[in-house]
Image 1 (spheres, rainbow, N blue to C red):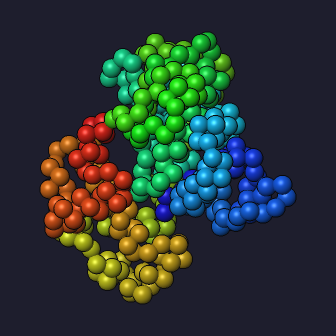
Image 2 (image 1 turned 135 degrees about the vertical axis):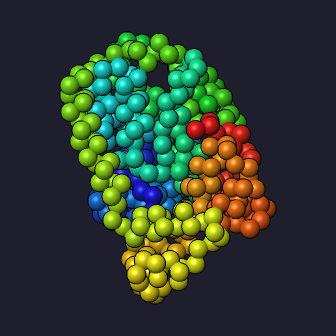
Length: 336
């Protein structure tokens, strides 16, 4: 199941004037208002994080002020070795390249991409989970936090050209412009920060290539550990994805191929808080998004490759997963 390091949840809670304890208790003025499952290895399942975030923003009542409060509090220092590697990289470009490669060590719910094919360059933020109502706000907070942190660790005056979001504007656009210090456009192709290529050459205040390279060796080790994920979910995803082109895989067949009974498969998945349908949907959604970005296959072909016999059924499922139709997702997504 996709997850998020606990610091993002704790910082969101602090931005809302509350405290999230290590055991999952959300406290305000000494009163426990809500309890989350205790984090595992310092990480929260994406569903728990998103439900908490939605609860917090509903209680806070002003998304722009909430995003600004979060952006002021979150620091790259909070994300461990990755944060140190970002700060000590020699230039802003090198910092963003490290984010692009190693962001998965803090969450597998989203990725960052640095596109230098044009000027301005574009630093985009792409979700990797099923659609959730709070994701529009999550994306605003993520980019606001990054914009503020870039200004903290870069030497000299960092100027952003503009910021874009896929979703419609939910407040006065000028308030968002004040939040980011640049124009903000909504209903755009991607969630992104645009900045002149020359900005990427700005040095970092604590830039030290030797230190940063030393830290990236640790990140490479951590990435390797993630790729060797021993969970049943990871093993199941590896089997489900290539099997989808032959139709929707059946749990009994997959269990037999993995050397266990169907009942054992269900029990072990339940131990990880999952169902077979959860992992099947994750495999279908991830593969569909990758194929749509690749642009080599038609939507009808992608429906077949992800286990659907009808394009219309695939399109309805995809909209349920991602929040928009396949054609709209393809149009908004940069090609791979």
